[in-house]
Image (cartoon, rainbow, N blue to C red; front, side, top):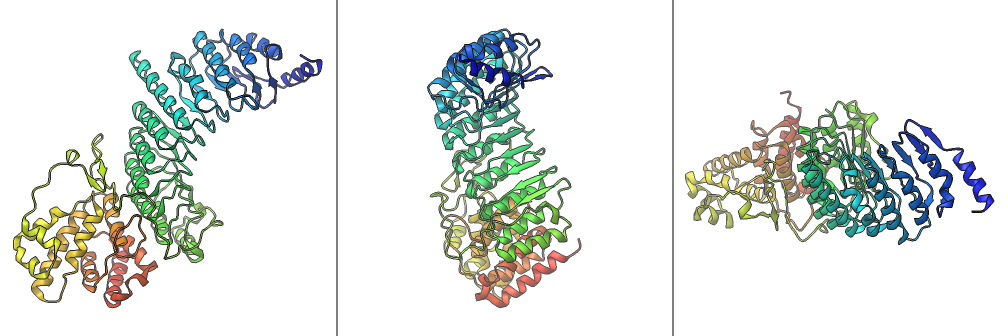
Length: 571
């Protein structure tokens, strides 16, 4: 080793932080190529009694240097925390797994019991994950609480290897009576995609101990998001969820919303840049209204959310006593929408929690189509099933027969009416009209909205027909709106899409509205089953999209008036 290099190393080591059981070489920029280059560092490690934390981040360690450091680690059985991020800058990718195996092998030989392992910002790819695979499976990591692998380029393959290692570690540790209970998992910017995320979801669900999950920028779309959502609901102590910059779309957002209904300790939700869109925002608003009691931060930025949906979210967060920040920047509010949202929050004395609107995308163009989610035209995933392990599995928007209770066979007359509805056929049904309730289910909100609008289209002022239509509408809506806020909001958002008041995903056909449908809603709003919360949702969208109902202007005015009255009733 050249004398200049020795002098540089000596100077760097003089800045080493020592104390509290921690030996730190953080950020010294050392180029450690071989055993000679780490002689002083190794000596310090060997002479340090009770070493509990070792910081090597911000240096670059070669294979031979790693072997020398590993030799010193073999006697450090008290070591708990390894901060080894950004440790292989300039090294060949093929070198890194070998170096990691040396270091991991030393920890296993020492009998160390780690609680924290940080290998972030090491571009080691799937091969690097193989380099820590045995360590993660070993007793040295059965006590692991925090695992940080941010920006490591793991890819799908690395994600699968990591998942299997965690599952194996959990199995082995459980066999010894002390199962692995990982609390913090960080793996952003790793190109995990759906397959890697789904593999990790299995490990997360098995452990059930997570408190923080950070997986931004991983190229995950709705399929992977749905797998992660299913796993999240099995981790009741979750406090932080960060899936920023993945692609949720409606299906992924609804799945996450369903998961959040089971979680009471969440404080931070970061779904920014996730293409949540308006229907997803409404579903999340429903969950906010009935749960998440200690939420502090909500990030729904850059999600193509429109003004009306953003206002629904604002109303939902108003009653959160611990809420500190709501980020709706970068959405499609428009200048007037941004101002309306600010005013709404200020009126609720919550103006200070709104993030800046500096990057708002402006109002969306009417021509824009939001049908790029998938081939599933009307998938909903608004399952009413709240049992722990009985989520309905959807295929092509329908629940599989083997996953749901069999419905009673519908009479031929009912099916005939629905295929070609008419006032005459409705009256002929007589007492069988009550069977129409069986044709609607909160878990399939689009079908429910379709049935409702078919019945409502038959409205007329002829007394017998009017009575039959309104009686049936009451029965159907009472069923649909009597469940959870989440279910009722899913149905109402589907209804808004079909009425042309909300732009939806997929190829959902908008209905050509007739006045009778709006008059039926006017009647329904005045009934006890139609809550102020439901009325507020409809009123918000009607007031921001009144042009969609121009063909029924008189009925639209009556409906708006009824909504406004309901929203301002004090009860």
